[in-house]
Length: 231
Image (cartoon, rainbow, N blue to C red):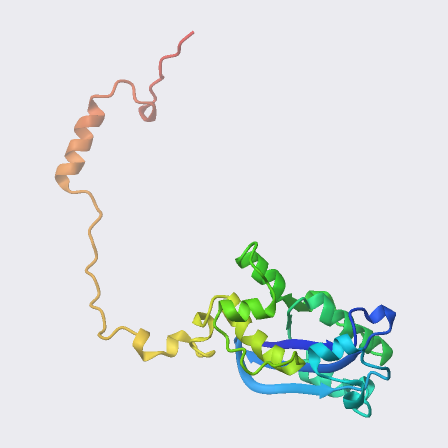
């Protein structure tokens, strides 16, 4: 099973007021395990990066200016994600920005039904507990030491580890996609001897006892007798 963990960095919070994507990061999962195949691009938003956004991501106006436009990488992006389910933290946010960019590039939107929101998974699994990526990394002992700033690829890599824990820890991926039936340690060590067939027919003594019991019944209906009626 192939899935894509996706994260974005943006110039702000709302694509409807002109904010744009400045970084896309994607991590490929097979059977919930990261394969090492990633997609990451910095993008020129064709506008400034506000100071508050730059403080979070470390991506400044000067840094992203001259980087490829989304329209220049859209084919690579769509080829990488294919038709796989998309895992995202607060999926509505990332998908809203990606879809706004897709519309600008003349492409179809990605339907929300394709996404799995890890915020919702976290709130279902741990009601009332913090559901931020930082909080979940700390809960699952995921190393945050390499995350000085928010980054789309860094966060997607962290989220891939968190997602694995949210769906049940490392148990789902232990076989790494191998069929359990092929594992020698799960096969019987020695062939089992066939059990003898157990007899189910009544013995002569049991048949005689049944006939004696039936002979004591008065007017049995299977012999044409009529049961008494009450008025």
